[in-house]
Length: 319
Picture 1 (cartoon, rainbow, N blue to C red):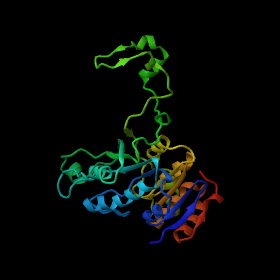
Picture 2 (spheres, helix red, strand yellow; picture 1 turned 120 degrees about the vertical axis):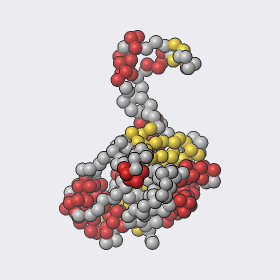
Picture 3 (cartoon, rainbow, N blue to C red; picture 1 turned 60 degrees about the vertical axis):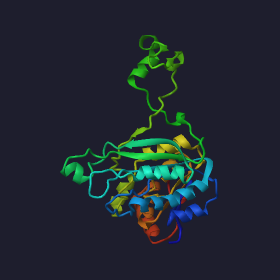
Picture 4 (cartoon, rainbow, N blue to C red; picture 1 turned 60 degrees about the horizontal axis):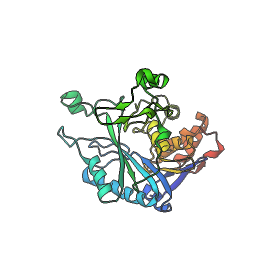
């Protein structure tokens, strides 16, 4: 399949085709962040395609090796991977951990940090072990590996601070009442500077983000026009966290399994340049809805894109 530029916006370009071809076309050491959620190694085949077992690991490693060449020295590769079970038994697959080890020990990535995405709105699964036999808890956590090309990738946690807890807010208002600087039993010496207001708390590596989108513009336009939305979208707050954390304005963000192009939309909102690529032409066509402001325009654009035409979205009002 030949790589095709489907549409572009003020800051980004969306491609239809094999993202290995897209990666090959890019300059080495030119990308700041690759943020993606590849098709998971699920036993049940999905409409968007997926492999299983060792075949999956080898398949994904092709992309990772090429990503490493294209990343800047301080660039990052963030991969969201859902959990899975072995076939026919209530035993967890280790595929996501095998990917972690292979990428580090064989491909030369560094594991900058492991993150875990807790999706409180995820439905109970797998049905056999959770719903029917009731011998396993529901799987609500994805592993999100933050790989880096060097040991010191670009990152600034001050860009992703979270609101202080209620107790911390009280401490900042009246430190003498709630705070006693001294050495703790653990041996940590907590000094006077601990009660300084830094604008927010440092986030943990457990990202609590519900994936409960039901009435977004993307889904409304899909419904209005009569096309199927991508079934495995991640919520915008997931790529947003890493885009803000690991990049600066005008940096380049790439999603090699673009799907509905959530990554591109969030990158555009935060003034990052972006590239997105997906094999499925219909998913790419529908992803343009994220950058349009009317269903009339959306129908026209979708028809052009699904028929293989290029569309310059800069002529339309963007989000």
